Image 1 (cartoon, one colour):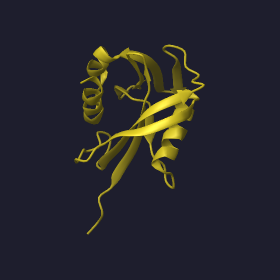
Image 2 (cartoon, one colour):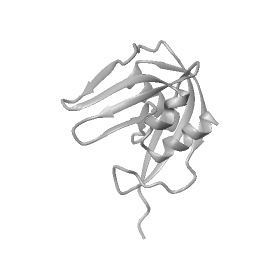
Image 3 (spheres, rainbow, N blue to C red):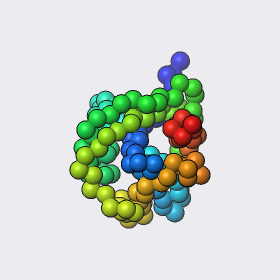
Image 4 (cartoon, rainbow, N blue to C red):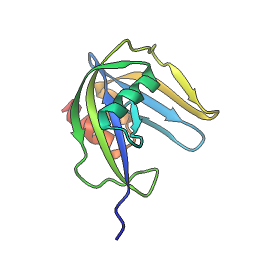
Length: 140
């Protein structure tokens, strides 16, 4: 019997007043919004991955991070055949090198842009089922 494969992800929820920082990512095949963060790499812990992801994407260090949500139900990864396991942290970040609508290009075709989105508009931006659960918890 083979063990199930998991896609382990970690995301930072960064709030400023009534706004949350979202990442808009796209290329010629995908276009979606999500909280900043990404995949946990081999031989890396969850919080270590969160710190690395936010440093890569936002050039910021985490001052404080508190676990907010982990999915306890099955969620199929939308980009693969494996099960998705996602950790969401409330993050207090420092020295964030982020001007409004800053855009980053990864490779030649992948784009990523950050925007502050009001709590009232969060739900309409989110694409992924787990992000929608987190938004519902944040805004209710």
